[in-house]
Amino acid sequence: MTRYILRRLLLMIPVILLVTIGIFVLIRLEPGDPVLTFAGEDRNPQLLAALRHEYGLDQPLPVQYVIWLSHAVRGDLGRSFQTNQPVVEAMAQRLPATIELGAAALLISIVVSLVVGTLSAVRRNSAVDLLATGVTLVGVSFPSFFLGLILILLFAYVIPGHLLPPGGFVPLTTDVGQNLKRLILPAITLSTLSIAVNMRQVRSSLLEVFGLDYIRTARAKGLSERRVIVRHALKNALIPVVTLIGIQVGSIIEGAFITETIFIWPGVGLLAVQAIPSGDYPVVQGVVLVSALAYMFSTLLVDVLYAWLDPRISYEGAGS
Picture 1 (spheres, rainbow, N blue to C red):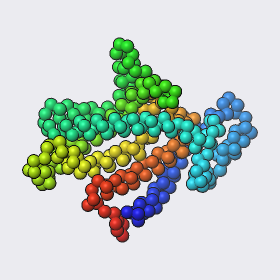
Picture 2: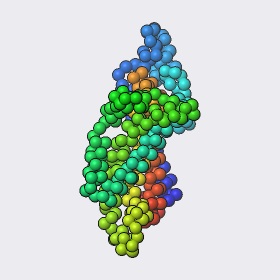
Picture 3: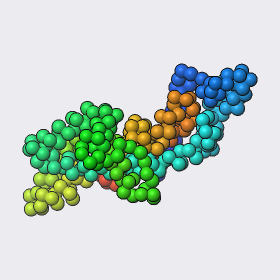
Picture 4: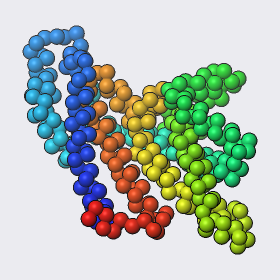
């Protein structure tokens, strides 16, 4: 297992390099000159030249990339063009809000998909199963931005009493009640797609496991249906579900781009969205790099969990 993990870590290096090259090139293909944005109405050529030199934008692109990458390896992602704040510091301030939103969305997704997916598999072709299938189709079909706007319209304006606020953020340490009220709608929005995918996977995995010999043997021994499902079927059925959840953990920052913007949730996703129009290269590059790293490490964690869920899986000698 140790050799496998080390090998995976080494294979991440070229992937990270490709990610950094991709985002470095793509952000610079965006129309407009960030220096003109910072300079405002003052278009003095000497001032513009001084700003380009200060931010290193007067260097050839390959030189700019090497300089940025050499600093990033040391944990320095540069400074924001807009605020002159270190990108690492800006992300550290926003990351707790994104983690809170992502953790809430992930918790909702896991609980709902496991409960409803299990009921759907146990009561196959029942009203519960048909309803779950319908919810799955709706969840996959609805774009998150559209669902978020619908939820805001319903719960903040249409339903009498204005049950939930339309957006904003209150720190958990300041007011727990207000924090949770403002967390509900964005967490549901962010979790809807993963609920649909996970619920469908739980159902199909359980139905496949229910047809195996060891499940029939457990039932023949007189074990209760609940024990058969919880102790025997669910653990093996969760193996493909763990893959999906692991990918979703790594995609929290990516998924938060739209959700945080809709609900004005001050996380890392909103930070990147606000940086894109002004061409704040260091902020966008830093957020995408951290998101990619989170995705890769979450998939590695999934592989490790596989060995715990199914002792038959072994990585000894993998890649040899």
